[in-house]
Length: 203
Length: 203
Image (cartoon, rainbow over all chains, first blue to last red; front, side, top):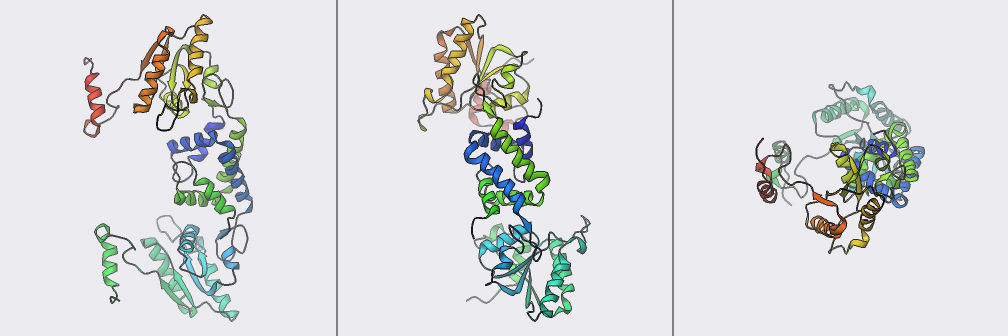
């Protein structure tokens, strides 16, 4: 069978994360059945996104403008920078609505295995932001390291905390403990010990 | 947050079967990172598919031509028609390479629950194909009902077998039994009894 339009569509869909060959076929069929309501709008949205989305030169967020929407909002606390690995993490924290400062997207973690060193990540720009703030008389007060609690994530956190050591800025990390709604029975030992160590007086 | 290009893309992706909101976000991010290799080709493939794909007036298959590729291949046995519910089933049988006849896509099954009667399905055209074959002197020898072994699928199979009763054509169904590579331990009771009932002499 030659690669016709349907096969080409399925091949491309199967390259999306979360879609295997089987679900790519199902998705393709569903779209072919509804060209006007799903296929053409998706084609348009993809083209528009490809044309319009850029990386924010300040924080590394993806948006239709540079500086991005978050960096441009006047109400956000510029003295608070939350460092995340990926844009997906930024989105997750934004959805929680619990953070009103600015972000800094690293683009990954340090990784000995994958050969990713500090120069492959957006770390220099973070140091630059802290220094520029101090020189401009609007110093960054706190850098929150919201990185994965994996070995690579924690190595990266250590490295950044070291680099920021002399910059006169507080460096913090996310609390570790029992997830909200989590059942103790299903928790791994590491999380349980972390939650026990960081226990707080009952209110 | 207003619905910008990224959000619109995620909303549309989340409507694909197999992609929830979380995986739609991951897919969108992955594409935004690789606009030239994934996002633009996918946009093009979608647009092209929307423009070019049509339903075969003979068998109901989806293809870039009408009659479809399968109906046009000279080597296929026109005396053998395999009736399937959806185009996805046709694709599955084609992948197996075990069938060299033609197809007929019903577009679903009869369903009392969903109020789908025979007139909502592509059944009249199937009867028409059998009659036209007889009149043209190239009669259909066998109609294979490759329908789901659900209640609705079997009701549909019964109905079609009834309708083809006087047409002088053999009507058959797929064999039921243990899947190839299947472990008895994991099989449901219905399949096990069907496999026992249809047992064959060991070769």
